[in-house]
Image 1 (cartoon, rainbow, N blue to C red):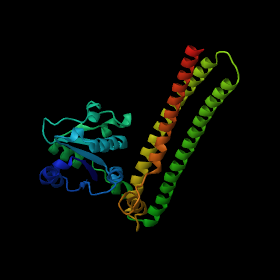
Image 2: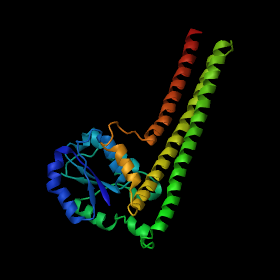
Image 3: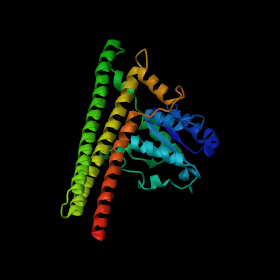
Image 4: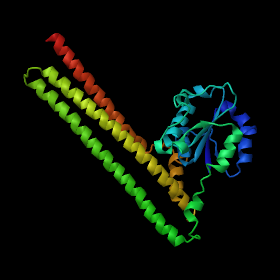
Length: 309
């Protein structure tokens, strides 16, 4: 089981001597994932480790609440939906605003998994008890309890499961293509209406443009919101599938996917790796900005015609 550690660098020496040492002592099966600032592209590296982690432990120091880097990590952890446990290093330390808004960190992620995914503040000894008894995920036991290391069976099931992961990516791409096409049509229709009204003298032209702009913006924003939520769901499902694939590969001669991910995200490559998922999730935002511009332009045209005309 892997636990991603969130902390301030100013607290690192204390953590190594006290909290982390105690955590490792009481949870010997726990793999602590601790990153530092030695990595050139630390965000890509941290994101890859968050994807691999089964949970996250946030040691809340005196100045942690104002750290932009910590807030960045917390957002990714909460978005990933893994359990997050907050341990105050001192009682009077302030919470991050991101966590305060969760009151107190509950109901984030899938509603039907609130009991598993909710975040909570625990003292260190309580945290060790939870990690040892309630959060231990033994994928080996779940995957291989009846196979007796039958590699032919493992490989066949691996092939089938790998195909489901590839099919999921294809379905996600189909969904994105659909939303891109629909949004492009909406923008084109609005542009055509503006072009026709501008070239042909029509009474109440400004009103027509305003109504068209409002309708396009409302419909477009709703579509972009749904698109974004679907991509988020696909991302979580694909992340779960890659976790299972990684566990299966540990029983095979080569960990192909794990090595590929490390090559892409670690310092083995000179250029910063940007995943296709991250790029894809920006598309609804781009179209959302376009719809806001359409609304502003429509209102500006209507106001100018009203005052000038």
